[in-house]
Amino acid sequence: MTTTATTAISAPTVSGAPHSDNVGVRLRWAVADSLTITKRNILSYTRIPEALFFSTVQPIMFVLLFRYVFGGSINVTGTSYVNYLMPGIFVQTVAFGSVQTSVGLAEDLQKGLIERFRALPMARSAVLAGRTTADLCRNVLTVVIVTVVGFLVGFRPTTGVLPYVAGILLILLFAYALSWGFAVIGLSAPNSEVAQVIAFPLLFPLTFASSAFVPVANMPSWLQGFATYQPVSVTITACRALMLGGETATWVIQSLLWSIGLLVVLVPLAVHRYRTRI
Image (cartoon, rainbow, N blue to C red; front, top):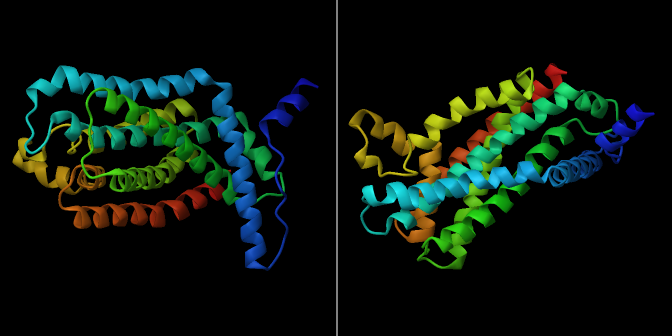
């Protein structure tokens, strides 16, 4: 009886994708199933408020640490350090938040939940799309909180509301692309602990060997090329240009190309891994 009740809670009711040759019908069912799984994952966040709380504490700590501890020792030209810092914090925050995709999928695999999903008449893509979309929604909430903290410590965008929103949307697109990469890791790891151990060593060089916290010109010459053109730095620079002014088009296009390119590669790879893993 306990097992039945647990299963009923863990596995949501899905729409039941029909076997149809009509592409439009199959697409509508896949979207409906994905939204159902998204809702399930979002509800799971609300049932563990401690996890949501601590996921927002880390970026707030980074803001305060770099703003008040390291900020006085880091010189930037053309703007205040807090204005320089916040776009980097935004990108770092959503990048770290995307790691939860790998952890969540690994946990679902470990508990056997995804096997129960496979037994339901639902689109196979719904599990991955629902997980990545739910993590995107959580990243939206985190960005809102970090924005408030940024304004409290002196962050002042100079280009207006629309460019600021465009910068946030660019960041969220990049985070969504990263989530699909971490989905591959989550589906490959034996458990959630290993998934997290694999994800962070891949992410740390990209976030800290970037333009997030210090100008690339202050780095060793052998590191500057990588730090300038790797995807995290490109997205940070594009966001910085949108929020503070500067050469916008070139960096925004490069960031879009990185995000779209990652999605083109990682979505099929994650779906393939999902089908072969289980």
